[in-house]
Length: 175
Image (tube, rainbow, N blue to C red; front, side):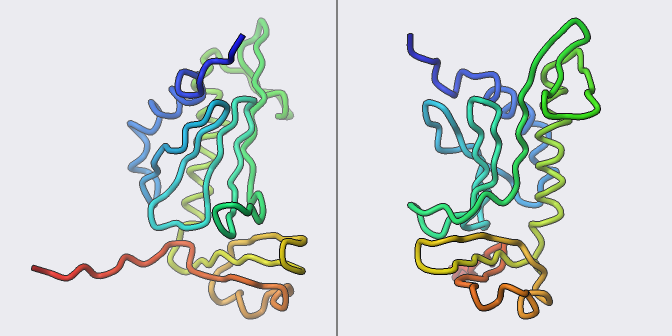
């Protein structure tokens, strides 16, 4: 039996509904995109090389891309392995365990709000996304650093890319 497509999943529908009343709280309005059978993405206009991947198993990861075919690093994870018992819904990863009578609130408290807070802390004009690589297609990693820390970074010699997290809008010619 085929699994239902992701756009019919609780994860997709719940996030879509939450974004209707919460997207204004993000520093850059997110867009749902790249629906696949087992995952979908949340992207932010003017934030290049970063994508939040939501997978059907409860894995939520912020991927950093070097190019379209090469993931450098998973910058942060907001995984939620949900379960339910007589006390309510809970995350199997969380200690101490907190119970919620509403599945949507479990996701809000454990995924959406922490993701929102992460974007508020990292999507700032003074922050740079830096990619590091020991050798081409070898070990790689990524970090978001304030501009004043980019030159003092201990891994400076391995850096292959360092650009503002938020791409500046180009001035459009006026008519």
